[in-house]
Each structure stands twice: as C-alpha cells, then as structure tokens.
Image 1: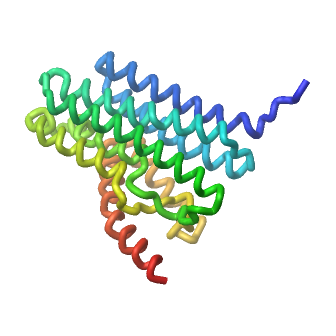
Image 2: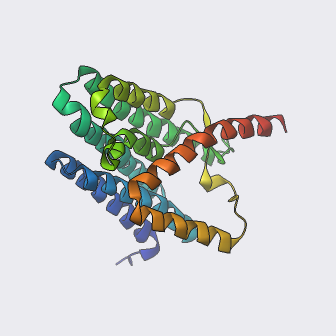
Length: 243
C-alpha cells in the first residue's frame, strides 16, 4: 500500500480550508451576517497565500494542487464576493444594474482564472518567463476591492445604499481590471522591498495589530495602497521591457 505523502497533502488541506471559508461566507451572506461573510473572505485570502508558499517551501507543487487552488479561488474570490455584494447592497433595492454588475464580476473572475491557467501551462514550456508581474489584478485583490463599499457601511458610511448605480459602476470597473492587460506587481516573483527581516516583521506585526483592532479601516488603507501601486507597476513593466 502506497504511503500517504503528507508534504503534498498539507498545501491541499489549506486550499480546501480556504474553500470552506469561501462557502461559509456565502452562508453568512444569505443569513445577513455580512461582517462574518467578509471576514471569511479575508481568511480564505490568507489560506490562498499560505498554500502556495507552503507548496513551494515543501517542494510539493503539483498539477492537482494548482487546479484545486484555481477552483477554490473562483468560488472564494469570484462567486462568494459577488453574492455578498449582491445580498448586502443590490438585493433589497431590486437593482437591475446591480444584478448585471454582479454577474459581470463573477464571469470575469472565471475568465481571469482561465487565462491565468493558460499562462501557467505556457510557462512550463518557457514560453512565458515574466512571473514578477500579473497581467490584470488577481482575483483575491478584485474580491477585496469590490467589497470596499460594503466595508464602508461597517465603519458608519452609508453612501453605498444611497448610490446604487455608482457602486454597480465601480464593481464593473474592478471586473474589467481582472481581465485587463494592465501589469500589476506579483509578490511571488520579486524580492521584497524591505530587505531587513526585522523591519519586515515589525511592519507585519503592525498590520496584524491594526487588523485586529481596526479591521475595516486597515483593510481600506491597504486597498488604497494597492491601487496606488498600479501606476508604479506599469512604469516598472515598461522599464524592464526597455532594458
């Protein structure tokens, strides 16, 4: 009997844990507990980051793990955020454009992951060598970005309910960025800007503490920082092409 390979199993278990949190977020959204629904998406994002890191560290990357991660991402960062934003903002307003925006986001998330899978297959044959950039924004980032109007209501700003069409337009805009040709930084493929391990741990600790005490404020600030990095990623991409 073939022994169970724990090294290969651990990353997949984390991926399935992320999938479970994605499913739980849908359940909380249906029950109207949107705070927990968004928290489940955030935890799914942590699982998504950890499974890849562990797979590379344990040298247990596999085609099964990659496909499983992709399917989990579609549910946790495509279907689930779409259902959350629909149930929280568009459902009670009977907004047709809200329904359209939600469908666009989920469909474009699927397209985004399909395109990423194609690029991954090409990279095996060395046809694609640029792994330090994503083309378009990744689905976890897209999920966080479309949920920002909802997180504003957690802080006390109710503008989203008074501007349904603006929120729908914003969701469509983020959906377009998922499948755009805009290069965005990939942490997987480049060195951290913070070379000092102590400095990195300090900043990481600050982020964790602020996420515990002021989760929605911190999430919005981090999302704003991410958006501000996009022009720099475009500049860096063009500079690398010229070198």
